[in-house]
Amino acid sequence: MFIFIFFALILPLMASAYDFERYNTKVNGVYYKFNTAELTASVSYKAFFRSYFAEERDVVEFEIISNDYSGDVVIPKEVTYNNITYTVTSIDNHAFRKGYIYDGFVGKLTGSGCIDMTSVTIPNSVRSIGECAFGGCSGLVYVILPENLESIDQNAFKGCDGLTDLYCYSETVPSAYENTFYNPENIILHVPEESIEAYRTTKPWDKFKDYVPLTKSDIEATEKCSKPTITLVDGKITFNCETPGVTYHWKLSSPSGTSGSSTTIQPITLTVYATKSGYKNSDVTTYKFPGINGDVNSDGEVNVADHVKLSEIIMNQ
Image (cartoon, rainbow, N blue to C red; front, side, top):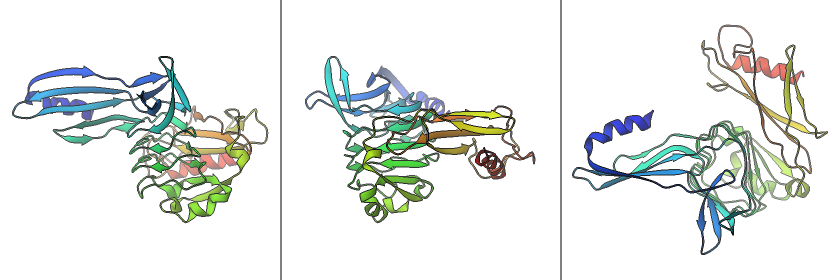
């Protein structure tokens, strides 16, 4: 909506204009910028550019980021384009944003992130993550950060209010800012067992909800847990996974979050993924309950009490 308002305001000011579009290169579902001299690639975004000549002003330039990522995103260590293989070494600023605009006339306007993306796995070749790289990606459930990661810029996870687990495989604590993580007190941090104390005592990594040690076999795992299924029969919710002995990590969400109240009918969504020692995490399964409108306890409001009630149903599966 703000994009259309912006056009309505700025178009009367223009004496003349020209449009052009530039896309970063999409390979197997991921956008990249390529450095042909160093044979490296950075994960970037799909971008549209426009420029206008405005009366008594310099050229006004802005860009609209229009990403389309969803589901479980796995970034590869290497990518081949035009028969040339590049090593993926970084994630650009705003790489997974959606609707972000910058121009020299009105400054910065920000939209959302890729809200339908549920997990991201980043390869060991990546050493840096840019500013607001995952900003607004509220559907993210977990993110896996690589062993060789050195730095994470400001607001990299701003607005990722659905994030429950962050896995960082680096034995050396990466540099980060106080505002790199969004509400870390609600996130469980999984790190190498030999480095857990370093993370607990290094800012801003010292603010997480809990710290879970990872073994070498966890980090070096090659086999992946099967994606779990969710079934609802006669009011009973059941998780199943073809990989035996897994642990299920689940959460509930609604459009208004897990607190507050509303008389508006809202769906409740359940997400779950599976883990097992010595295995890679499964993909995330998302389930929107048929026949459940959000008011689980039938008190006329959609609020945290409904999440508690539904949690009790799940815990007693």
